[in-house]
Image (cartoon, rainbow, N blue to C red; front, side, top):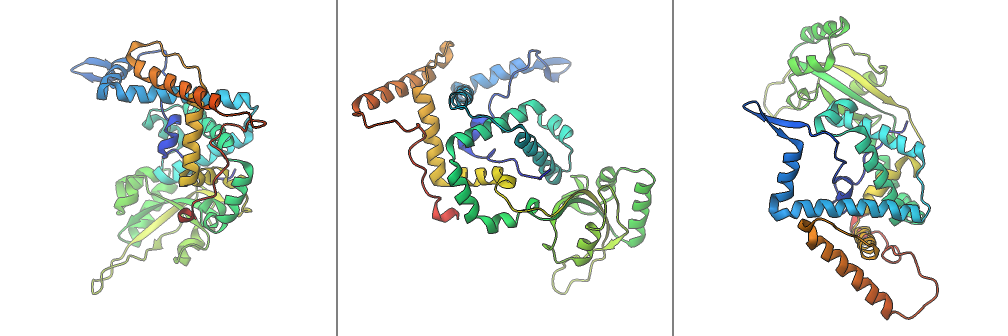
Length: 350
């Protein structure tokens, strides 16, 4: 499957997707103090009270907007292609592996998430993009950013790989024999590698796209290996300050994934295009207006007295919308409330 990035998770405007990932029925223990537990519920209650409840109000607002996005998609008859959802999840797995050195299950465990929660956020992201970004705008943006897209690893023949760096060829061969004998590459990297950057990630270096490196020997070796295979010892080029004595380093490499060459298409880069567009100031404005319109036309009833300020904010939006619509004369069929026509991409982000 096409490897792709998880998109737009860093955008403040789209933080709606990351909030309130679904409470579990049980009340698990999250910490112990001298054998006395602190539960998940206690943690939630403390978060609700933090910052005079502002964190909780923002989170509740995010949960409301998540529901509104789903309802708007249902109203407009928007459906997701399950194959596209699964392709994005597969791409996320690849980028997590390349970025952290962890498989998907371990990453979920360490970040305190479930696969269902992550999939639901991806679905919400995709629905929001379909509601806000017209197909014609996506196609135009894709054409404008072709050269930038061509530089991304998943649009090239590429590998994801690890290495273990040692001081001599003999050390590299000794480590290689340990791995051939059943040793775990990632564990040995953490124990033996002299590379402080990749050591903590089990030797994970990340992506290499074919033709994008000056180290011809390394590239030739990587693209000749099958996933799971380990190389012979390779001499490393270690840059040193001018006048310093050359530093000898050797390494062995292991390919985790190998991605064949593929055609550059909008479909294979839909999530990247969504991220770039939603980072564009013009589209961010449209996104904010879309969310504001959803809030303004919604009939939201907040039952907890603790969050009445949020109830009042929703009521004020609704009343302002009704006054605005009541003041406008009929002008033919109404356009969908998506913040008006799509603005062109901002020049500074091209």
